Image (cartoon, rainbow over the protein chains, first blue to last red):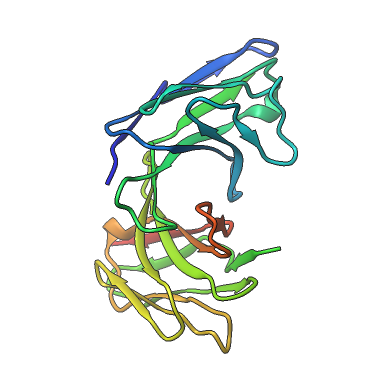
Length: 116
Length: 112
């Protein structure tokens, strides 16, 4: 298993500013994932963050808008830049835990972002 | 591409009622199937899974059977409790990927 802590748990931001979300895992993991969960919708994968290499972004997401850092095997950050109300969502960090079977992801509690 | 379709919510039940949340899928090959649950204010956590046809996943009184012939993985519980109120996500993995494809989620509300 893996225990994931995300900060902040929620924030209210002004249009045009940026928010950085931190994700800390209690064990070393190779792959970390960032998801967006919009109200009433499913989870959408933003990017996969691997330590020591550039993040891999999914279609519709770009590095300029969602820069990601992965400085070591237990930590990652996601920044949401140039905020607009459409960015209001829950952002979730997740990992495939060591020893976990394929498909079993462990999630942080999420960071709820409201953009005014 | 792969996809997962879940019944629309919210599903509203009285305590001790029988629960079914429908899930059907489209995938290449033989996917592994999962149900995740998200309690209020928390992240998702794995509820149960099945990795091959006719397998039944079970946990906390919930069950789901992998039906290849109907490409379904419906979630059931015989007697729900107020504490089961949450959002339930059906998901699949195929082709050796580590990354699940999720359904839209179904909100369950259980009244005392």
